[in-house]
Image (cartoon, rainbow, N blue to C red):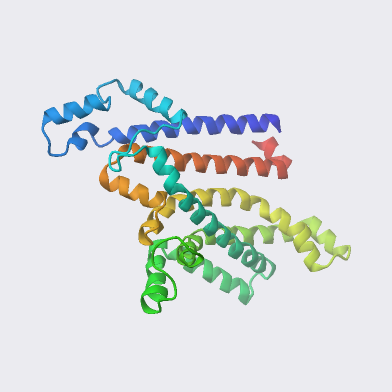
Length: 305
C-alpha cells in the first residue's frame, strides 16, 4: 500500500507542475499581456505596464516568481477588481463548492437506485425507462435545461427564484440542472456493474445457499458494484465544478464560475491563472483520493497500478 501511495503521489505532483506551466503560459498565448492591458494606449503605456508587472523579465524568472507566490497563497492582485486574487477566491469558492457537492449528491441519489433497479431487471420496462431518462438527461445541455427550468418555475409560475443562492429554494434549479448533467454516466456504469456482479459465481453460490434477494443485493452485489463508481464520481465532481461556470452565470450565483466568466471577459489574467490552477488541483486531488479508496477496497488495484 505504501508503494501504491508513493506512485500515486508522484504522478499527482507531476500533474500539478504540468498544470501550473499551462496555467502560467496561457497569459502569453494571445500575445504581449502588457499591450492588452494598455488597450488603446500608447506604446509608452504598454512599456510602463510591462515593467510594472515584470513582463520584461525572462519567462522562467516570471514563472518562478509566480510559482513562489502561489506556494505562499499569493496569486497576485486582480486587474479588474483591484483586490488580492486569494481574497476573491475565498469569497467566491464556497458557493461553487456547495453547488458542486449538492449536485453530486443529487446525481448519486438518482444514479445508484435507478442503476440497481435497471441492473436487477435487465430488459424490463423499468430498465428501458431508466435508460430513456439517462439518454434524455445526457442529450440536454445544462444551460438549456437551466433556461427551461427558469421559464417553467420562475417566469410562468413564480414558484422558485431565478437568481441568487441564499435559501434552499435557490438551490433547486441549479442543482437539478447540474446534477442531471452528471447523472447519466454514473447510472449506466451502475447498471453495467450490477449486471456483471450478479452474474458472478459467488453471487450464484450465495443464492444457492439460500440467501434472500435483498440480502445478496445489498450485502454483496451492491458493495462490489459501487467500487468503479468511486473513480467516476471523482471525475464527475471535477466536471461539475468546471461546468458551474455556465450554471452560475445563468442563475447569477456569485461563485467561482461567475468569477471565471467575468475574468475572461475583462482580461483579468491573474484571476484566470489562479482559477485554472485551483480547478485543476481540485480535479487532481479528487482523482488521487478515488485511487486511494479503490486501492484500499480492492488489493488488485494496488498490484496492477
